[in-house]
Length: 142
Image 1 (cartoon, rainbow, N blue to C red):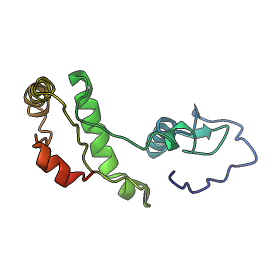
Image 2 (tube, rainbow, N blue to C red):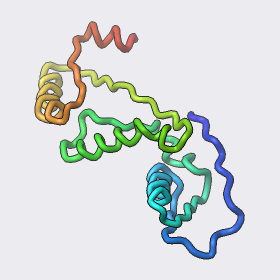
Image 3 (tube, rainbow, N blue to C red):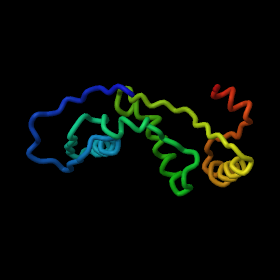
């Protein structure tokens, strides 16, 4: 389980705010950050710990592969934002980009993956690679 830095809460709510964001998960924090950077007075409310509820348990997956093709422009933009987030906030987020390995048990499954890659990954410039069973074992032993 990832470790989280505790974000201390203010003990007093402001009298007014341009926007109140309810929920300190990844979406709430990202929304509050964007609004604050645009000069909007924003208050972020969270019942528990910032980033430690569901956002802290989902392993931080930003999966590009195997998605509905209509989601690909959104995930590409999300990846662009994540790659620059440490610099944006002046600190470490712990974001690390790596790969995902899908294993196929049949030739039909492999053909379906290859078809998805050709129809969806290539037009969006996603880096994909079909590997043999031996190479999969080398990449992910056991």
